[in-house]
Image 1 (cartoon, rainbow, N blue to C red):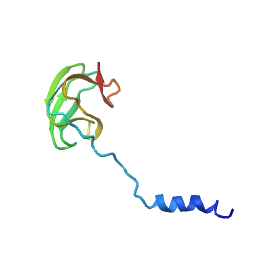
Image 2 (image 1 turned 180 degrees about the horizontal axis):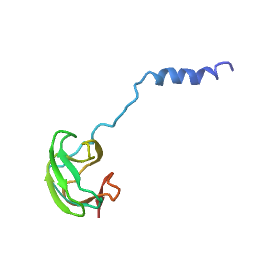
Image 3 (image 1 turned 30 degrees about the vertical axis):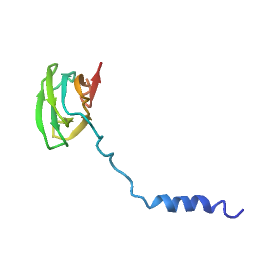
Length: 112
């Protein structure tokens, strides 16, 4: 019965040598064309970047309480903060859809 205390230690040794993952890989997508009608419910003007990765695409300024249509292909939408920091990521689906920047200015959510 002396092996019982050793089992958790062995499990830790086997699993503890794996590096911690800090971010999930980008979702795989079969989207080839999207049209996002996006509304800015935030009380401020915000910047949305359209690209394959944050920092690599075109920027769209969304004015407060305004609606804009953003089109693209195999890309994502990135909500940027005042200093250009990444606040949120939105993965479009194929075809037409509606989305909005949340009223607290921290996310983009799909709207039915």
